Length: 197
Image (tube, rainbow, N blue to C red):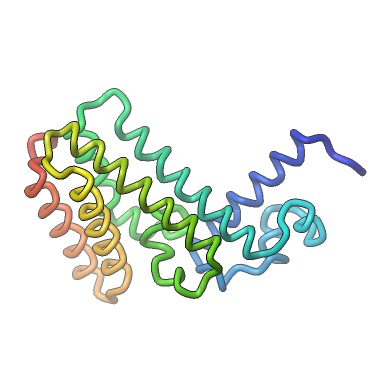
């Protein structure tokens, strides 16, 4: 049975969203094609009608993850001043809810440890995503009046992702919460975001 282009597009999008969530939660190596297709309610054989390989799926799913991150960032900026947008983003990013939602969280924190083992296409997509996300932060910091805003955007993204990674790595819940809270407070102080609260 042949499907029209719209149906194929929706099916492909469904597979990519399932893959993005599974890859964030379990890492690229923890995701099998058969299990992923079953989770999406599709047959294993249908996978190759949409993707040439698992590596191709992983690379495209990384792109989807960064699109989702962009959508969140855009929502946080919509109809608000840059200080409030940054404060809201820091509050989301360094929250226990984000820490605990590995399947929906930021791809930078979810995948950084896996990148060295992935194919060049996936690493390229990841690098493009990091550049875009740090660029969005830099643009917002520039609107907020921060000097060297692009450098500051890269630095802020590094601190956000690093704090989230560490908070996920420690076993003690109180220490995990303290990492998030201390990092959020330091970023808010450095970029004068406290007035937005």
